[in-house]
Image 1: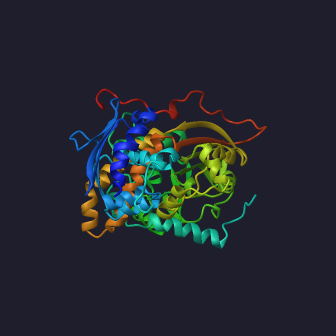
Image 2 (image 1 turned 45 degrees about the vertical axis):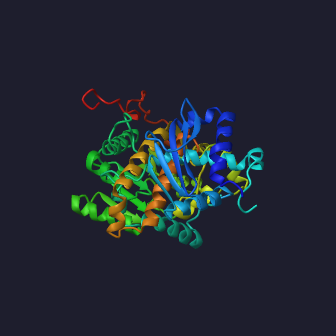
Image 3 (image 1 turned 90 degrees about the horizontal axis):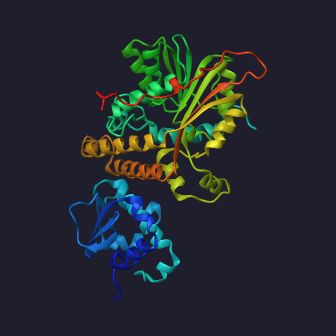
Length: 126
Length: 318
């Protein structure tokens, strides 16, 4: 059985993207937490000590909550409209500073568009 | 170049786009805008300036750049709820006409003018920018704030402005543009999902590049006096709107002012706008221009920039 997309994104692809794009954390300059229900929670540190670790933290600028199913489908080629529909339909919830989370979405988009990283990702439907 | 009035399809398309957004209940906009109901970039003398003060400062700066004097006749293209024309009439003793395509906004302007006893000096007409025709030299000053994003053909609008402006008249164009690289992609017909969504949800669909604004003015009888990039001010403005909207979200939905889904849409777009200004994907500028009188003697524009600048906050203001 394949690992859920969220697990692969936060434990393999995002750390690798951050390592390969050292300018990205500085652009965000904040800690963001993502709670993927039914899968796990991660703290994405996009400050001067960047990294991704399991679990939530208290100093997050923004915390996103999403189901594993939605995360999988949005990450597997979700358009901006799909992300927007999920947000307006309250399938993505948040607390804190939402613009910071939008920057994290840029990370998701960059990871999703990177052919090298993409090749390492096996989505549920393929 | 098309210099004629708006065609029926243009009128219908633009009216539908504008109405879909600006005819939403005024109570909704009041829930996140400042007290002046200025639905455009405010001007922050410091990062901590409250929105209400920043709104006042933007209106003052705009009026000063236009060198407003008592008795001036002012046209505001895309006047919204009349934040600038009410302010200008009240503080500078000018006479103002605002145009908008949103009937609800025009009614709101008229109601407020009646309430404030300024009906003789403040009026709003429901007119397409391509159709405005108030006669040659009808105005001393023209301003358009946050409306060029709704204008497909800037030259067509600026050409009319040039005709309606008195000799030596000033025009200030305040609006959002996009960097040339993304504008060029759009011009090549490359699709852009974010732009399509913005048009669908906000009725704004024309993201020009700054040079097109300058070109439109220069080719239609204007001389550029000043360009100020105020993108950072817009980022701060939208952050304040977002905070206000989140604070009022439950009430807006609970009182049935707007459905939850629509409010969330605004929240998402505001958050995206903040990032877009931070990343220079969207740029906001004020462009000040003067009607050209080539080869004729004229009054000089002030030598120094005092009236184009906002002083930093005093010690008392923080």
